Amino acid sequence: MAQCCDFSDPPTDRDDLYDDLEGGVKISSSDEGSEWLGLKTQMAQCCDFSDPPTDRDDLYDDLEGGVKISSSDEGSEWLGLKTRPSHDHSGRSNRSNAHVAQVYRELNNIKERLVRESQLLQERETKVSEKEETFRTIEEYLAQGASQVKEQANDVAQLENEFKTSLKLKTQENNRLRQNFQSLKTVNDSLRKELMDLRTEHGKCLKQNDSLQARLTNLQRKFEHDERKVQSVPLTEDLPSVNKKSKAGKSKVCNSSDLLFSLMGWISETHLRQTSKDISPSLQEKCTKMIPQIHDVLQEVSRRSDEGQTLTCLEFLYRSVSLLTPQQRSAMSSTLRRIGEELYSAKEKTDPNSAVSSSCNDLRRGKFIRHSNARLRVLSYLIILSSLNQVDKVAYVFELLRNEVKNSNGKELFLYFNSTSILLPHLKPSNKVLCAAVIDVYLQMCSDNPDLDLFLTSCCDPSWFHTVALLWTLPSTPQKLLEKVSILLQKISKLK
Image (cartoon, rainbow, N blue to C red; front, side, top):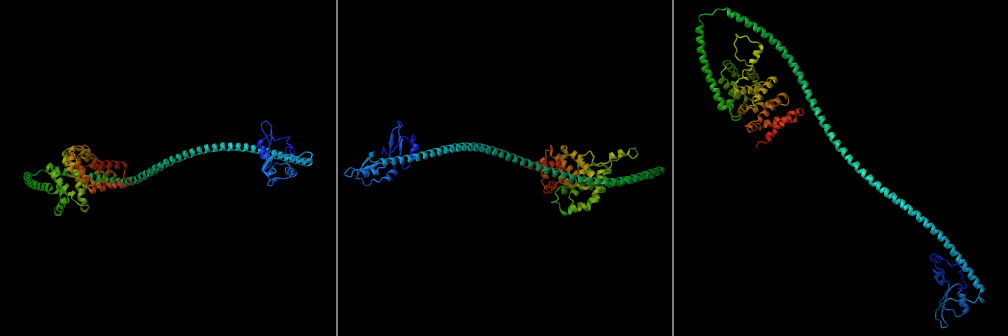
């Protein structure tokens, strides 16, 4: 075997030789360059050793370029490498060497091809590694960019929420301003309409004033003419007897008037101080029938200047007027207006011979509402508020009443005459001037009042709450007035 195979150039790479000789003969060397010969499955397939050879020549024929495993003469197996004698098989050895050289060349070719492919694979692996590194770098960069984009998206979402909240607040504020503008526009339109009505009424009043001034001038001329005419007539001697008769008649009238005022005082204290629910209908009807006659009595009392009788008459009148129903008030509107005008513009007694100007006469007007007695003044205020409808006069009386209730005596009189219900008809949203005046009086009653609970209890009435509720439902109610009403309601809510 060693002679038929020429291994002059043995392979140097053991691993490459193992890869090249799959299924063939493997030739390698140790680290010191020693040769070795191995058997592979292909050579075993080429040589059939199932039957041991019996002839030496047959054995050499079988071992052309291979390994022979044989037995002894008795058929035992053996392993060994045999070589034919060079002198017997020279031709066959040459063929074997050529065959081995051809195989070796093929193996070298295979090895070179495998080396090239290995180099290509290494280069490809290097490129793949570089690409993987590049992709890894790109992936990290993309991950970092994605995190930054996510953070920016969160910031944008937060800003969007803030902008939405701000927009919502601005929208609410805009709606509120629009509503306030509409309310102010409505109030402005109503005030413009009232101004036009007042201008029209002012023009009528100016015309009426001119006509009244002309009439007054004529009456003054007539009075002066009659006065001169009376002065020119001489006095008669029968004047003392006439004076005696008049004094006797006057004493009788005084006695009857004293009785009348005593009865009026007794009725007021005994029957009319009760609530309207406890008074019998017959008594209410009789008092209603007496109201037209009280106007004449009131004029007579104003001429006498008797304080006691004036108080009795005013209290009876106030109690009777407070019992009137809305239908009775409308039926007696003219009578009530005359009574209110009498109380509002009654003059004090003056000396006819004294020379006074018209401005002094105007100062003497309002004898009842400027009286020194507080009880009489409060009664006059309440009767005027129950009978008159002129805004200017009623507003002036409200101002006087508010000043009156600043002291404790005025507050006691306000509660004594149960004035809360008297002011309630003027608490209408249609008339903002009088409505504000009523609320001012109520608030003045709440300040420094030892009888605050009594006043708040008088306000706890269904009709009072219904009237106040109308102020809240109307959008044209001024904001300042609503604030005052809320203060009043807050005090009522604290009532135990």
